[in-house]
Image (cartoon, rainbow, N blue to C red; front, side, top):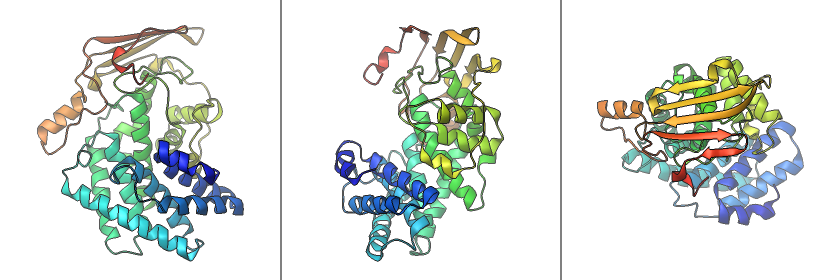
Amino acid sequence: YNPSHFENLYKNDQREVGNTILDLAVLLWAENDPNIKSLLWDWCRLAIAKDSWGNNLDLEISHLLFGLSITYDWYKDSLPDDLRKGIREFIYQHTNSQYAFAKLQVGWWTRSYWQNHCWIKYTSILASGLALSRDYPEAKEWVKFAESQIKMIIDVQPPYGSNQEGLNYSVYGTLWLVRSLAILEDQGEDLFTQSKYLENYYKYYQAFSVDENLDTFFDVGDSPRFLWYSPAEIFAKLGQKYNSQEYEDLYSFYRFKVKKPKAGLMSAVYSLPKGSLNLLTKDLDHIYIQDIGVYSEKILRKNFVVNSFFFKSGIAGGRWAHEMSAKDPSLRLNRSHSHPDQNHFIVWTPKGFLISDTGNSKKS
């Protein structure tokens, strides 16, 4: 969290700047440490001094706007006057541009409701609008529009918990979708009750794991075998919302057993569940997901997986999305990170992959 790392993150992965600001905001909320406050203020100053975040319309600026919006919303009264003004104007300038672009409904992510960029963008617009709702009248329009798009995302997701982008991209996108619904819940609207996708996501997640360690996954489509981000935040909130032992166990597993990637600090904001480390239930030893044409089976010996078989023969994008877009052509069907897998299979043993997804060699 030392600000000396800012330039390196800005140069190599600008999303991590926003993630760092968000982490510091949560740490300050949890510990109220003046040293953490000083670090948070420094990171915010460095961030708003930069004008270019990717193309200023995609993921880089969305991560930053979310972190800045949380900081501004939680600590508005304690921010130094110049920094408060700087953050407020930065959020306004960039979110107003995002909103104008999204309203045109022509950008590739604006109506790609099965794609992680879409989920992340509307979450950042929602958070920014709420943070500035008392400063700019038009911010309420941002909130209203983002909420309508998030509702659309929920409405068109497959009820099976399946995601056509592969495991890693699904974790990335679902993390942000959960954040958006948590924000709306705080505003008095509970969309979790309307989402069978989120309620059943754990089945899809475990279908793509090769064994009981949940650290290696079938590398379907563009998604690699290993996690970029910890899913602990997802499981913490979904365990709370659905009173689900499966999600509580998954949260506990990633929070206390898995060392890398580290659990996101945002999970601390939710009421943390207490689960066991017993994960692989008999019902999930073999799973068929019709939407994406996936069959996954794990062969166990004394509660340890000795062989995993994964078969995929499905339409790129998933059957559900194709059916939905056929009914409503305005929905943009974006194949995104999925591959048109036909009669495609992967075999794994504890010694490694016997047969892998060669179409993903650059990202495996």
